Image 1 (cartoon, rainbow, N blue to C red):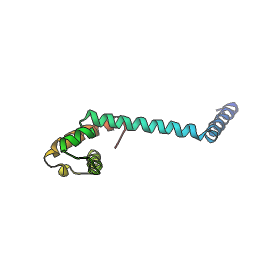
Image 2 (cartoon, rainbow, N blue to C red):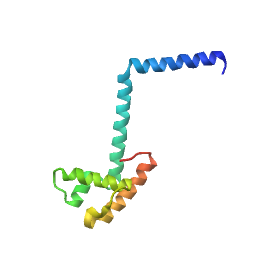
Image 3 (spheres, helix red, strand yellow):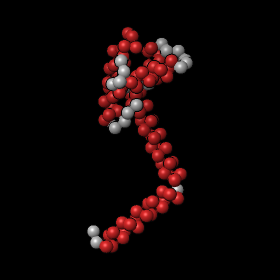
Image 4 (tube, rainbow, N blue to C red):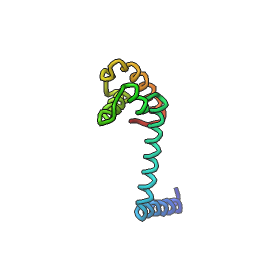
Length: 113
C-alpha cells in the first residue's frame, strides 16, 4: 500500500471511530435490533420443531406459574446437550426428539438457546 493508501486508511479509521464515539446510541440501537431478530428467529425455530411454550405446556399439562420457566430452561439444557430428558417422564422421548431437531436447526443458523 502506497502513502496515499495509508493516509486514506487512516482517515477512514478516524471517521469510523469518531462516528462511533459521537453516536453510540446508533450503535446500541443496531445491536438491539440484531439481538431482537436473533431471539425472534430462535423462537420460530423452537416452534417449528414442536417446542413452542404453549404447545409444550399443553403436552406436559403445566399450569400457570414459575414452573413454566423451569420447564423451558430444562428444555434449553436438553437442546444444548447439558440436561437430561428424564424430568419429562412419559414425554421424555418426544422432548428428546424435538430438542435434537431444534439443536440441528439452531446450529445450522449459528444460533443457540
